[in-house]
Length: 240
Image (cartoon, rainbow, N blue to C red; front, side, top):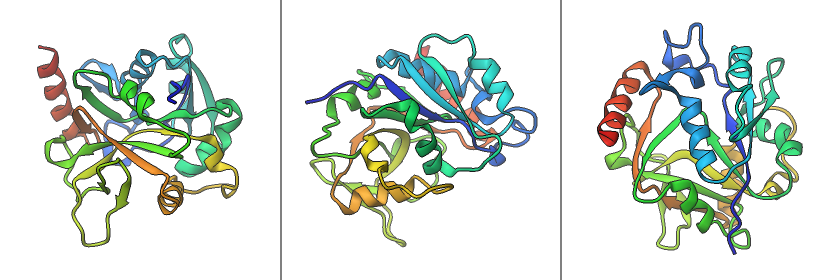
């Protein structure tokens, strides 16, 4: 049975080095695409999916994000302050777990951006996530029609949604789109301090509890200043 997550974690602590010079004096989540900061695109999608609280972690130029989100009510933003420590994508979740509770939660990168198809992808994810079978459900974008992504993909996907990690010289059809649903129980014996979330993806994969859902729409990898322009063009075309 699917239960729609009401809480989310948004990763907003990165240095945004590839986005320079836009990030010299501004954290990457506040870089604007189509007139709106990346972070607001993400928070608006979460609000639309029924999320009432979003934990946002901060490290680089944290006060700007704290001030930007202070007045937000849908969802309400809770800051997880990492300005004095570097925790990595996995350690960030472990630190935030007391704020996230014991139910499955959405997990989004602050710089992920996509144009939804007929139905919102976060709603589709909530309907698909099955805690009896899954520890993690990843939103997977087809590499062929994604914007700004030159890589070889992350996973192949079986017909039931089970994921198979790309081997070193392999090219696979799907890339992780920066949105997931996770069970907190996955982190019960997680390492202390800094570690990458991919460690948890791999653990769930080994236990056959890592699944994917194909993104309906167009995913945009907004990693560089050039990619911002490409994403804006695609976004503005979609609302024209």
